[in-house]
Image 1 (cartoon, one colour):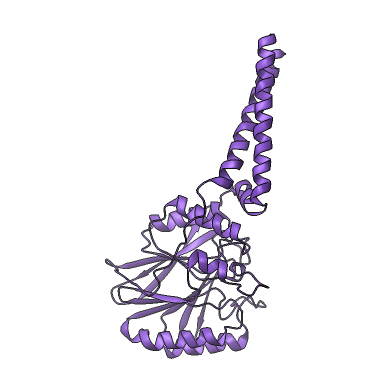
Image 2: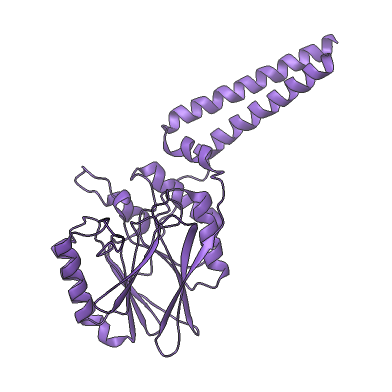
Length: 322
């Protein structure tokens, strides 16, 4: 009987010590992570046929997000477009968490993010401040070979007139220089699912598509809908992909990303790549690092460490008495 008690005590001691160390390390390790900025205003060399990935709505589910990013990198993506909602809630802790996880992954290809509605701190005078500190400008452009990529901020659901004006001026000045032009944003101009309206207002969607048509945009990528659906407006294909970790919406399908290729003639092919379901193994660490004040987490970690030390001392005493 004593042997079983000692074994149970040893296991409990080890668990308490390891949990305490993990909690303290997870809060104090590494300091604030560095920002992850897109290649705004830059020209990236294509280096042969252009392949890139598009994904969105990871919402802080970094277990799935990591799998999606790794799969896109293995498939040879030159860079990755993220169509927004990269955090579940716009708090400093959640942005730090996502940045730290991406840094630990060692992505090694540009990650080009556009803000989603969950990425902005509503009810504040500077709703996009945390996003901009973490991922740079809310609207920007870059190029790769003969292709122009434009990130549009449309999270108000009404497509702010200043954003539309910026888009119009950007396309007017840059579009003639490139064979292809792709716009990526968070909220789609239209929801192609019958009876659903998870999209821009009708007036804003029509104004946006009229502008894109006038500038001969090749295709649009969007998120916001946690599924994969395709649309076509005025001859422009719309690819809606929101399956990088958020709770899934209809039509319900597996987590996924898009692998896109542009051939030498300028033709775009977009292929949906499914990613196997994986349990959210990092939720405990995510909860500790994003849902509780760091001071409270350190106190909890200290208590677990103290409990582990007391159990170790007690076990040592019993061993000597035996």
